[in-house]
Amino acid sequence: MAETQTTTPKKKAERRAPPPARARKNRPAAPAPGPHASLSYLRVAPRKVRIVADEVRGMKVGDALAMLKYTPQSAAKPLAKLLRSAVANAEQGGGRVDVDALFVKTLTVDQGPKMRRFMARAMGRAFRVEKKTSHVYVELGTAARG
Image: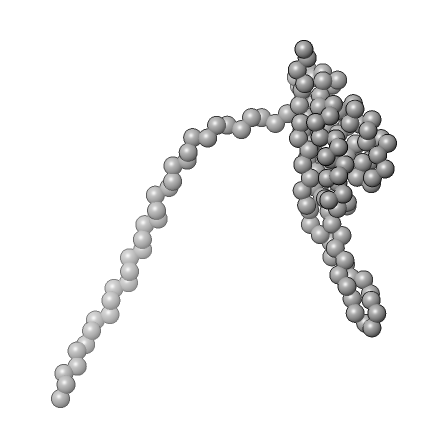
């Protein structure tokens, strides 16, 4: 008759210690942003807002507002309002700012959430319609007088 061996159950594995925290690399501090403003959930597709934003980027604020006033795209009016808000933020910022020397330093347009709706179609079907939104961020810079 074969002899059966009884094995003792293994001990529970001891909990491992968490790995040591990684040392942060010395990164240069990001420069403080200049006067800026943001607009969230604009109900215009980002592709259409970028067409207008590309025309305004890098311009002086006065020239940009004048151009937006006569631009027929639907995104022009909210972008003009956003620029005026950034100029007001620059004036309230504390330091002396020459409003005539301000220019559009960065202007980014990101995609916001999509509102999904359904459109009735023939024979009881429904097609999905996506109403896109945009998030817009503008930062102004000061042109050096020379």
